[in-house]
Every structure is written in structure tokens, then in C-alpha cells.
Length: 352
Ligand SMILES: NC(=O)c1ccc[n+]([C@@H]2O[C@H](COP(=O)([O-])OP(=O)(O)OC[C@H]3O[C@@H](n4cnc5c(N)ncnc54)[C@H](O)[C@@H]3O)[C@@H](O)[C@H]2O)c1
Image 1 (cartoon, rainbow, N blue to C red):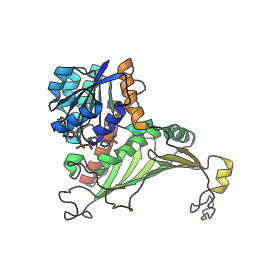
Image 2: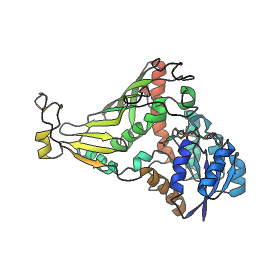
Image 3: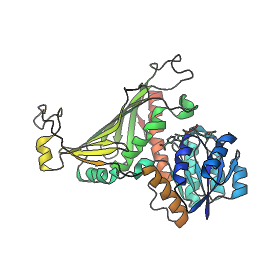
Image 4: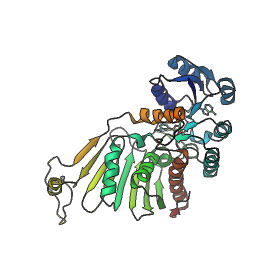
């Protein structure tokens, strides 16, 4: 049986472990964390493998056939270089790295070696994307209005922008990635402004990052997008990860990893519309009939994501991986360009 190893037995590591426990054709051979008891706890849950605090020792002892790298954003580099040098296929959590020169060099080495390498953009594996992609293909999109507002995750490195990348890079990257994936075009220019100071030191000691940001994106094919996102909300004030794709005759409300609802794609729908929207003649509509066609998320997309990577390693065929390492790098570069714009106060060209 092929051997799987995991580095970083924290929050997202546990998410992947849940999936591995459902795979019975691979050996869960090693778990590594700087904190030994975390690795030991994973061994206990897996019912197999050995715990390590040093990934090199783990590699030497068990010679894994694949590895999941689930470490914080600033801890990347040495682990990936060694993994590539040894030719071990790897799955790495977003955002890959916060240093774009480092990420670019890692992409180069992965490609040079022809190594199977994937990233944790699991939203790409949701079944709602088939309907969403068809909608985008059939309806010429003019604009996307997107948002995501929630609270602060409980990870020690998250509170500081230099160690997390900031809320947009660390969280909203999933939506930025889905924009690229669904629109099938690349961002051209971003202009981002960020605000902070609403979340105080008294409330959240050690917090040093933006509370929210607003970004204007132009894509290479002319589509424009606005993205409003933040981590300022207390319970009850958060709102959906929603992206409204607008075309001239139809629109789609896409709720990340939840559902997608398309309006105006059949005749009945065009006549009905939803309450509160503006009609084609510019008047406010009052009809509140349930309209639109909704496709709900029905798959465990995280499980599918992990299984797709494992299958790619077992068969040697990476073609079904929806987020290869080199492509994931582009989504990271996209969000890091937003950070650069927040810092300089100027529009920034997205360069890969
Ligand atoms: N795909 C997703 O939806 C998703 C969700 C949550 C987190 N993430 C990403 O996963 C990454 C980790 O996040 P998390 O919430 O699991 O963080 P975490 O702090 O809960 O866990 C990270 C673990 O890595 C360990 N670690 C750090 N450096 C190490 C090293 N050199 N060797 C071995 N272990 C090491 C830490 O001790 C810690 O236990 C982040 O980049 C985050 O953005 C992705």
C-alpha cells in the first residue's frame, strides 16, 4: 500500500485526517507537528503510523509516497524544497506562501520535476460549479458583486497580517480563486482599500490586521468585480460568501460551497423576477414569488478534493486535479496584489 504522511496536525490537518479515515487503500504512515502531542493525537485517531516533530526524520524513516502539508502561511519553503528534491507528490494548503518569489521558485521546481502537486482550493470540487460554469458560458458576464464578512478564526498566527497575509489573502482567497475558475479569465488590475481600528486591543489582544477591505478588480476580458470582505462581525452580523454574476438578461447568485441560484434563464423567470430587484424598465419589482433555478451543494467537496489528489498519485494521472500547484500560485498572486494595493494606495497590475 502507498504511504501517506501529513505535516501540520492543527485545524485543517484534522479536516484532512477525517477524510483519510475514509480511504482504505492507503497507509496512514506518519504525522508530523512541532508539537509532539498533536502528532501523537493524530496517530491515535488514525490507528496507525508514527508521530514526529521533524519532517526530515519522518521522510527518512517512512519514505512516504505522498504528503499533505498543512502549516501556517509563513512556514513554507524548506519543507516543500525537500519534498520536491525527494520527488514526493504533495498537497499543500493555501495560501502556499506569502513570499511570491519563494512561491514562484517552488512552482518552477515542481514543473521542472514534473511532480504531482495540488493545493487546498476544495471549493472547486463542489457540484454547484457545473451549473455555475454553464451559466457563465451561456450568459456574457458584465460584472460580479462579491462579499464575505465573518469573524476571527482561532489560530495563533491569524491575528497579525504579516503572519496570516490578512483576511483577504487568508480567507477570501477561496472566492478570488473561484472567480478565476468560473470566469475562465485572469485578473488584470486590482485596487484595494482596507480599514482597521474597529476591532480593538481590549477586545482582541494582539490583533494587528485589517478589519475589512474593498477591492475593485478588472479582468483581462473586460469583466469588472467588486469584492467587499472583512472579519469584523460579531455573532449575527456576518453575511454570506455571495457573488452575484450579472449579465444583460440573467443573473446568478452564487453562495460559496452552499448553492447557486440563477434568475432569468427561462421565460417564466424573466417575467417574475424577485422582490426588490429592478425591472428592465427601471421600476422596482414587488413580486415575491419564489423564482430562479437553484442547484444545492450535495457533495462533500473537501473529501472529493483529497480523494482526487490521492487517486492522482495512485494512478500517476494528475488530470482530474482541479487546483494544481502552479494554478493555485496565480490565486495567491492575485490576492497578494490586493495587499500591495492596500499598502501603496494605488491600482496594482496582477503579474504571475
Ligand atoms: N482550505 C481551507 O479551507 C483552509 C481552512 C483552514 C486553514 N487553511 C490553511 O491551512 C493552513 C494551516 O491552518 P490551520 O488553521 O490548520 O493552522 P493551525 O495553527 O491550527 O495548525 C498548523 C500546525 O502546523 C504546525 N507546524 C508549523 N510549522 C511546522 C513545521 N515546520 N513542521 C511541522 N509542523 C508545523 C503547528 O504546530 C500547528 O499545529 C493555513 O495556511 C490556512 O490558511 C485552509
